[in-house]
Length: 252
Image (cartoon, rainbow, N blue to C red; front, side):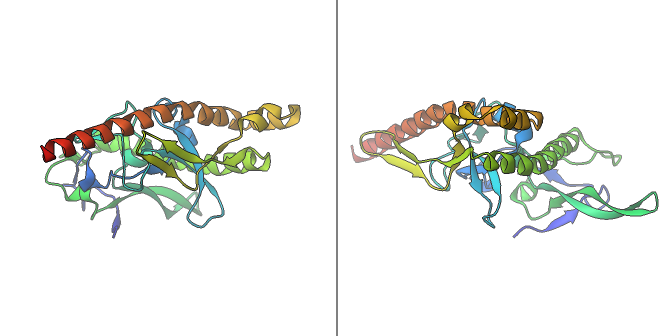
């Protein structure tokens, strides 16, 4: 159970956060949220899809990491085997909350950083310092602040983008049913993607509207990202071969 506290350099002056990867940190998951603000980076490494949020009334973009709920094919012996780390993973135990503050005599909601003090990355024996000995922000915390800003901006923008894509009939269900080898078949339910043919058939006004909003680029980045399915399948095949080899060795 998460226990978030408002981050400050007095109560959390000795806070350290582990930055490695592993099952013990909750990294063994099949997909994580993604945000349009990072699509340009994500599409080089991961397949990007859409799915309905928990409430079922809004779209959320995700990157696929594996074919099972607790399978992360990018996780290898304490390393994350990709050049770019999704913001939802990079943020670790931190999130942006909002606090009422009076600015120029008016109450406004200002973004503030919170930390989950019960997160396994916080409970680890070693890690990166969050604050400097004198109380200033560490380079690690400044990096996390940038990640959280990207998530916050991307979340708001993404809601508008996916609503516009849906209004133009560009979101369609994806059947993900893959025969990885002669004995193993994998699939993931509930995923959606961009309808390439319908996108190509959009007329001038619709294209202009999507382009002005910046949504057209996001749609094409999602389509381009699907080439990374080959990488996931190849890694799944490799791991299945390793399992078979280990099983054969155990019998011999």
